[in-house]
Image 1 (cartoon, rainbow, N blue to C red):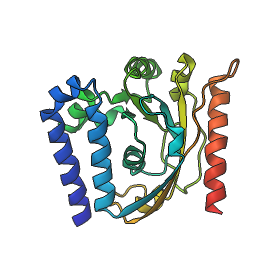
Image 2: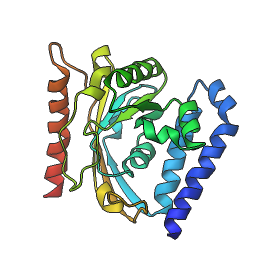
Image 3: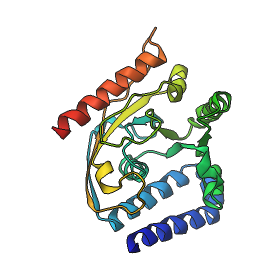
Image 4: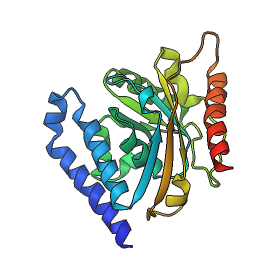
Length: 230
């Protein structure tokens, strides 16, 4: 319970801070928000004694924006990626999170994009908004759509990859161990070790469909996760 309350306090502090520094965020060409998100994520993990080993940082080009595609093991995936990828990152998040008072408003101010998974037309419009914002920030998406219950990589859906059709660079990321530090249905992050693997950027190939791209990314990430779990 103490650790859960500590998480609430840390997140609450950074959310309130975000409102005060918003004018500076605009003056920084919307880059300050990414640094605050990364700092908040790092503080959360360190406070909960979560140790991350990250490979492949050399695959990130400073100043470049990406569609970050990752496997989904727990809610902790977001701070894990936020803390370990040195990019101006936002999240394509389910719309329900934007209804949380104060927290939802902060997400909206800082260019997080709400996705209505039950309304395809609305989801497409949200992705179109994200595409315009990718001039200055990267977006994180979980193509599985829901968290894995056993640590294995589920089927990747192609819908979230619609941005790939506009030539954006895709940064595949694999995580191992996030499901052990925060189990489904729990909100109390446990201490432990997590591995993060950043693969070289890729793009949708000529004549490749989104479904084929989804399968290619799923195979890449799944192969790594399964090989490390053996």
